[in-house]
Every structure is written in C-alpha cells, then in structure tokens.
Amino acid sequence: MGRPGFRPPSAATRERRDSCRVAGDYTSPVPDTPAMPRIGLSTSSVYPESTAAAFEIAKHLGYDGVEVMVGTDRVSADIEAVARISEYYEVPVSSVHAPCLLLTKRVWGTDPWDKLRTSVDAALRWGAPTVVVHPPFRWQRGYATGFTKGIRRLSSETGLSFPVENMYPWRGPAGVDLRAYAPSWDPTDLDVDDLTLDLSHASTARQSALELARAWGPRLKHVHLTDGRGAAADDHLLPGEGDQRADLVLGHIARSNFTGDIIVEVRTRSASDRDEREALLAQVLDYTKTHLRRAT
Image 1 (cartoon, rainbow, N blue to C red):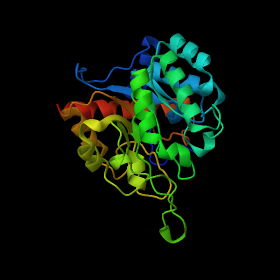
Image 2 (image 1 turned 180 degrees about the vertical axis):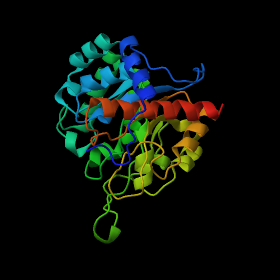
Image 3 (image 1 turned 60 degrees about the vertical axis):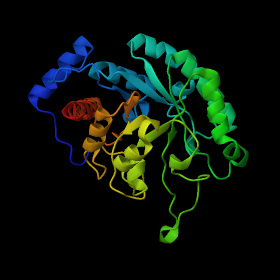
Image 4 (image 1 turned 120 degrees about the horizontal axis):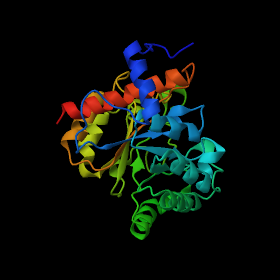
C-alpha cells in the first residue's frame, strides 16, 4: 500500500520526472532566483533505502546537496565510501548529522566528544560546512557540563558550524516529561551561536516553528524541513501535512538574511517503490521552491 493520502503523480509530472532522470536535473516550472537558499536531502528521507540511494535520488531530482545522517546504514559511517559516492553522483555533502541518537550510540565510539571529532573529520573530508548536533542527554553528565564551551571550541578550531537542533520532551505515563536532555530539549537558551530548526520536533514539543524561527533571529543557521501533528511520536510528515505552517516558515526564511541550508527530512517508509518515493521527494522540492519564491 502507498503512503496514506498520497496522490499518484499526473502523466505530465511523471514525464517531467523521467526526463529529469536522463538529464540529471530537476527543473521547477518557475525560474530559479539567485537568492534562493540551498535545498538538500537527508539520507533519512529515503529510508529504508541506502545512503547511496539518497545521492542518486538527489541527483535525479535536482537537490543541491545531501545531509548524511550518520548511522542510518554502515556506509553512512564510512568516510571514504561516502566521499566516493558523492564524487560519483556529483552531489555535494551539504551537512553531517552527527550520530547523536540512542540508535547510533555505538557509531564512531561511545564517547560523545569522540563522535563529534570524527564528525569533524567527515565534514572536512566531504567539504561540508555544517555538523548538526543534538542537546546532550541528561546522563551524559561530563559532556553536558562542557557542551557549549566545547562546541564553541570546535567551531573556532575548524571553521565549521555546529547548529544545535531543537528536540522534544520524552513523555511518560500521564504525559510527564522524563527530562531526557540537559539542560533542556529546547536549545533556545543555550549559549551557542548556531541553531537547527526541525519542524516535526517543534510539533512534537507543541511549539510553533515559526515563533522559534522569529525568536532565534540570526542564530537560525539550519532547517530540517518536515511537519508534524503534535503526536507524542516524531512524525516527520511532508511539509504542509501537519500543523507547523511550513509555508510561513519558508516565507520567513526567504525574507530574512538566512545563509544556511534547508534540508528535507521526511518519512517516506510507506512509499511502495522508488517511483513513489521520488514523486514524494520531488513534490517536497517543488513545494519548498514555490513558497520561497512567493515570499520574495
């Protein structure tokens, strides 16, 4: 079965997508504008397909780059393998998502600073300017205590950006916040220069992504474009399917001095095959460009 609510692409859309596969490009019906932010594709957006598949799909559809979610498969943690894949498809790595998840707790070792140092090695090898990080877990006491100073030091030493991503509370019985992060899942008050806005996480936290973007101002350096419906589970819906008014967030970005990357990080697991997955990701790319242009 396909994705709930998925509308099969029209004959014209399929023809355009297929022709783009031959040309190695995706052309929106509206001309590009020079000021448009870069739009990348997260490797997590093609799961359960591979890291290599993300580069191939990004090439076919015309994404500007790929964010490598380290740990989604073994290849994603192989620095030289990813470098070869990026070179083969001629699609740059726009950002590295450090292995901060519980599911990736043993990827690149178990020490969180070692993970970030290896993430730096990967970013420098791949030519990526950005390493996305999460707030520390509460039980990572030493790491949490020195987190902000350590992030600043890494940024100063390497010239890379380490935007800290907004997360969400882990809710236990009766909706009690289990306090998984230290000092908080909301990085707004952290003493860091750069922040990553994830729209699905904002929805799960029952926040407004637009309000966060406005409050963060120039600290907003990276965006995970997705959506959610406020469920306890992290939805990662296509933008426009949830409650976060992704169109208004894109409008705000277009009117600001945003210089970072917009990364499409959506769930396509229910896609029945590659064609349906590509159609969904082409739809998101077109949505993103359309709302960026409308605001300019």
